[in-house]
Length: 75
Image 1: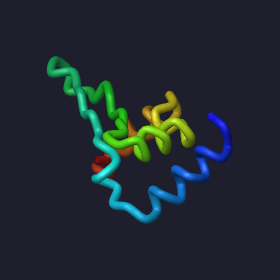
Image 2 (image 1 turned 60 degrees about the horizontal axis):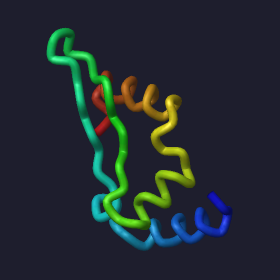
Image 3 (image 1 turned 90 degrees about the horizontal axis):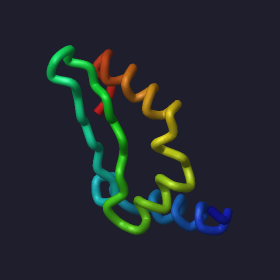
């Protein structure tokens, strides 16, 4: 993604409410109670651009969210 789009998305996201632009998918395994997916999805163009620019659903971010959820810090 070109840098100018990331800058526009970041500025726009600061002026708006988080919940207006993003939603979290929490999907788990009912057999062993593990959380499998904590992806963040953009529900607006600003949200989608922010997620893409910041790589918010990279494997490192998803792993971190699993740990945070396990200790009650996310979502």
